[in-house]
Image 1 (cartoon, one colour):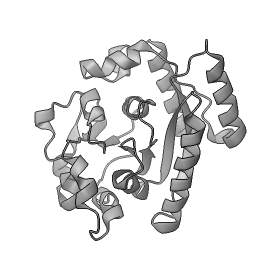
Image 2 (image 1 turned 90 degrees about the vertical axis):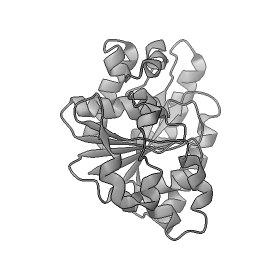
Image 3 (image 1 turned 30 degrees about the vertical axis):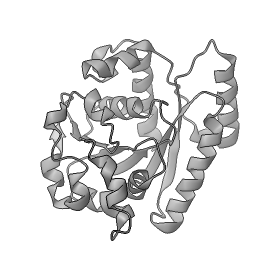
Length: 251
């Protein structure tokens, strides 16, 4: 199983949208995929139609009871895609784990019990706290969704420094899967400038596929559906299908 943490400490960059739709696209291609919702907001769970009252046991419980992983993982409406949902209780884990044994490696220990999957995606919260550090410690690679805006590069450099710290302290095998540009507006000169700067800095580590700003991507979660099921032919869905093909070849 290849484990990919999807992370960016900045919120609103399309992180969960990328997690849900990339996982959906790979499952549609025949892969067995596990999506770990590791954000207390539970947006990935909502985006796959998992009702809040049906989310226990969740990713919160498996941090203290890793043997419950198989019980917590459940199938979704997408054939081949399973989810480990999140509840608001996960927010308390940041405090509860401070000073605990193996505080940064709890998720990795739990995922050792995951079997039968080709891919595991971890939707990390928009912060660089203990939950995100658990996600990075459990991952083989990190995928960074990056909004095409001015402050994006500043946040990217901070995140890459954190990745280096995780490599030194807990996960020497962690590598960068790549950066995917999201919420891209071709009518905006700033989007083109940011894209050029990111490609100049990271070269081939930036995916060729660009995710456009698309209203159908925003609407889909309110219907409890991945965009690929909500509107397969919209530009956002087509972009995520292209990203999945590129991702599978690169990673």
